Amino acid sequence: MKRQFQLFLIAIMFYTRIPIRVNVSYTDEKLNASTRYFPLIGYVVGAISFIGFYLTQFILPIELAILASFIVGILTTGAFHEDGLADFFDGFGGGWTTEKILDIMKDSRVGTYGMVASIVQLAIKFYTLFYLVNMMLPFGMHWIFLLFIIYHSLARFTAIQLCFLLDYVRLDETSKAKPIAKKQSWKEILGVYIFGLFPVSILILQFPLFLGVFIPIMFLIFYFKSYLKQWIGGYTGDCLGAVEQIAEGVILLTILALWKYISFDILP
Image (cartoon, rainbow, N blue to C red; front, side, top):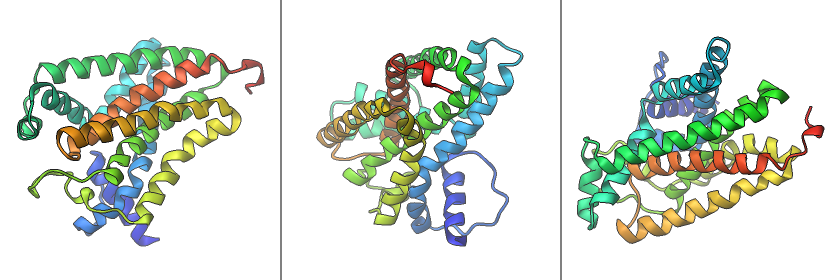
């Protein structure tokens, strides 16, 4: 149990900016093993983002409360995945060879493709959350809390599938994603599935219609598996960040599309 707690703390240290005051011995092997808790980090970020929304909605309009949840979430992760999204679109938008794509993604500067992708992604998340929050609010704040947990954890579950299906393509050890690129054991894979699917299973158990959320998720996983294999032969940390961000938008859009078919008279 102590080792598992250490692995969870390492995941917190790697994927967020949350300060950890406990002395934790770090190794690449432990970081690799902590991958099982990647979707669980979605619980943490989702809960913190919800708190930002919940507190500000008492004094601000819903639109600004949603923006506050974005700000809190970005500060929590240090824009870890948003940075990957921008680098990914710059790399694949401006590069036509594997070497050029990887070079551009490694560049810390943000180009036109990355900027536009970031704006579109934030707009999609903002408007889908705005409509979902307004639709769910009459039926209780707990639905909105569950929504925040689901879209953060399920998006991370989606992104980490690439680690199981593809090889890491960076040749150097300087990349921050390199340790998690090593082969995963069945424990890491099982942990990812347990923590990644638990929140959405709560929704599905009450409303089986939401099984439909897995259709676009499966499409994303296998599309990016094929696309990345074709262009660069595998994945990088920026690719994981991009898929996580795209998955957030897709999950929210799917839930929004399905929610209107729920029979509200059976809601508590």
